[in-house]
Length: 308
Image (cartoon, rainbow, N blue to C red):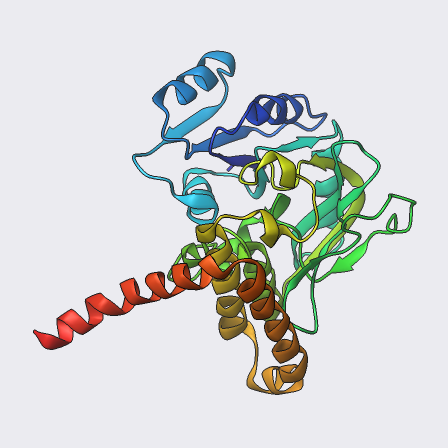
């Protein structure tokens, strides 16, 4: 088994993948295995990567697997004791891998390690750890704040943002469910909170290593240019992605929250949902029609089976 496998899931947006791969292959502690899951559905895209990066393994398919199932495929194909998962719009500092791997030495039950993720300008924070809010959403600590050194202390966190994160394979195998290491039902959004929440419930820890630096274009792969690195992501999502964002939060809560926890947080959850649905009703009413059409599509096959 190799020590470290790196997996990048890409849709081939802009030229992000080249910069990401360059930073990965120039690490002081270089991954023994680099796997690209190509969701672009463009044959030329894979050929270009193979031509430029001979040591990289590229796997393409006939359909977009989205992020969660793309990572599942990459993990199944990999052999590393540790797995680095990252977006194609992330650039790593040359010492990122070495600094992050040291986090696993803290405790044998550390199954997830993340570093300090900044925006591409190196001044604004993107994430210094993932946390679960009172209203049961995923919160990136430090998001949008200037990097003043406030989050330079290493320590345990609830989870790690999925844009760039390392996992211990032993943990992934232990928490693996019927839908994979990452729950494929999430497709994208909240898959990082779900896997962190599941790991925590099964006695694993997530650790923040601030010396491991990475630089991320927030929303670079799926937002319009005007929405890149902007707050309130839902303003820049199309109906399908916005639907996924809403659905996956509910799914994460239903999968992981205890009955007592649900009762304790009912009021914050209710207030948050009231605000969200008011925002949708006023500013994005077309989304409501889209949601109903998706729900109708899920119910219709079951009704047809019943009639037969």
